[in-house]
Length: 267
Ligand code: MG
Ligand code: MG
Image (cartoon, rainbow, N blue to C red; front, side, top):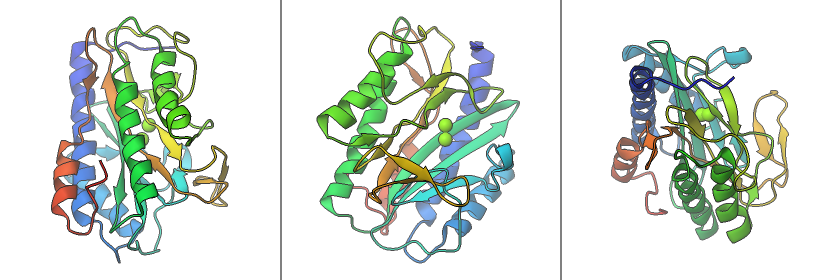
């Protein structure tokens, strides 16, 4: 069942998304070598609750944390833990907020310290692929046009692995609604996009092969070949000529540039 949102509902989703974005901007201030992902998670939870939201992921199907934090070869759904972040790590942070009856969802991969050129390229290409997908989210296109745009750029152009097991999704009153939005697929296939459709577009891109496995915690998705993976996500609303991006990277990128421990020169 696909729910198309009213303008009032879209504005409520935007509020939830912007709290997600502000939370990720706080994370951008905080990250540096020596802090743990569990500390990062605690900071995010406090920030969300102090600002009137509830973490969407906490207790979702038993997920025990506010953020999914996935380091290096972890693709998504990583458990925050007591391991310290090190120079050269890439740290994907995925956050959801529930507020006023609606969810917002966004993710960003941070580069801690100086990266090798191949990892810098992975981040740049994955972030660019997100926007290549987003720009297809207009009335008259189909879900497959978004999927194809992401796959075409990352897999066919750069030879990266596009994760098949996990996909983007509709969202609103529920964190995950129809339709699914894969990062691979055929142009002109799938659901026709109509005004008011709110979806999360979220390329999960592996530097090596596409294959992944679940870690023993039952949640953390890792690359089989042990190579790094990146993940960027926006919640957007389909509109006529130009999609409305409800989350924002502006504050995240500003804080990323201001944090001397993060590399913001890859994009
Ligand atoms: Mg997410
Ligand atoms: Mg999502």
